[in-house]
Amino acid sequence: MPTSSGADALGEPTGDRVRPVPARSGVRRRSAGLFPGGDLPHVQHRRVPAVSPNAHDFNGNGTPDLLQIDRAGKVHRYDTSYDAATGKVSAKAPVVAATNWPQGQRITGTGNDAAPFAPARKQAGPSGWGVYWSFALGDFAGDKAADIVAVDSRGDLWLHQGKGDGTFANRTKVGRGRHVYESVLNVGDADRDGKADLMGFTRNGTAAFYKGTHDAAKPFGAARPVPLNAISDPWVDGFYF
Figure 1 (cartoon, rainbow, N blue to C red):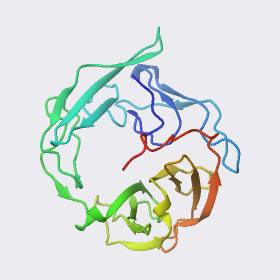
Figure 2: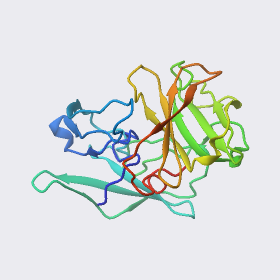
Figure 3: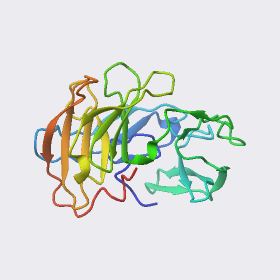
């Protein structure tokens, strides 16, 4: 199965490469980070306690799953497995996990392989989200609730502050000039100051780092270029929202 720099089956959209290991081993092994040079820290090899089931173990069997959504709204789930002898990750034949998957609505996992997603649907915010072309999720306001930042077609950056109940407030403008980016991504606390940070990626492979502030009125600092070792088009396929 090809590797990706994007959000993986373990539910860690950090940009680090993550190798799944059997749930019984109790560890995940993480390799060095993708931010060479600059002011961003280099992530060293370390052992991280794992939990079972994993964050994206939709059928509750202790191994991470992958989801594929087709244009008709049908969701296919691939159950993955890891062979410790060969170091290879493989996926079983896909199983249809849901149909008529709606765009822009909240879907709840059940942990039941027979019905991995609850039929009930809840509108997560106000309508009109079609004006955006890129999204990132994280606690950008610093209030312990997950927020959404989104870029519209004019390049304006908007914050939908989370209410802590799975819904979001009306948008407030928190930046402009992001039209140069193909996508924006929450990279977690990249500079280790306890605040969620943001990165923007262009189609030609350049990137910029935005330091998180935990201030809902101005959640990000000024752009700082990030070197990517001249990798051609590394993000467009992996991170498209």
